[in-house]
Image (cartoon, rainbow, N blue to C red; front, side):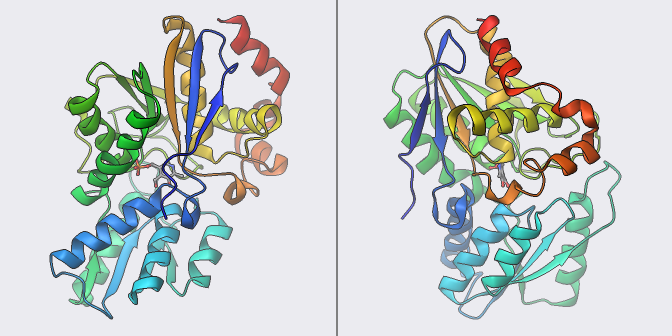
Length: 323
Ligand SMILES: Cc1ncc(COP(=O)(O)O)c(C=O)c1O
């Protein structure tokens, strides 16, 4: 049921490289997170932590919430999803439609995000209800293990002799799974961790962010920065511009993190040797972002009118001129 073999070849995105996007948005539940949700639930079942009728709690900015709601419905678990205002209204409605409960925390944490507040809320709930089960995607090895087994294995099978792999960093499950897999099976592939400006994952200063998926306001426990040898930061304004460009230029209606990873590739392309084979992981598609990234009023109200000044043609010309 997992769609691990869908790749889109963007052969002219940057003239000197051969770029493939690994499309994860066609998975059931609409994102790469179906694999994470299933892996963590089945691991907890094997360990005897989860039994039929158990109640789960998890923090999510949307995609994992939807995926866990799908898995919980299918397996007969109750599920309470803790989200924040950057979660799209559509994601919240989908999670509720799947029979799960949603709580939205509104208080910013010390790093200007909501993750600290979401996790604080979970600790309060766990203290009150001893039967509640927290899978904790930020610290759970079953999160990255599935990307070692599936996501990364599918990339090495589809694109042998890969030179560069660009992976967004939220919980870092995808990134750490790829790092573990490629270190064994393709150690010559250089992995570039993509993060948002304002995220604390790699020790950069915290700042307010509005797009869910990539970036955190609290470093996840599974992220082992000593294993990451290259990072590329992307500003949210560039994420927005790149999503819109992908939609109009290629007909690819991409989610926010896809805009970020593609922008990271374009930022790096001038330094990459001619003919490099590059894969970027595209975690979801654009539907959940119609009211934000693809909405002119939201974009200008959030980032100012300058954000939409770089036209699609200018962005395209820029990437060609640099190569
Ligand atoms: C849309 C989207 N992109 C990227 C990510 C980051 O993936 P990971 O948590 O494996 O780092 C997430 C994680 O929630 C996501 O929902």
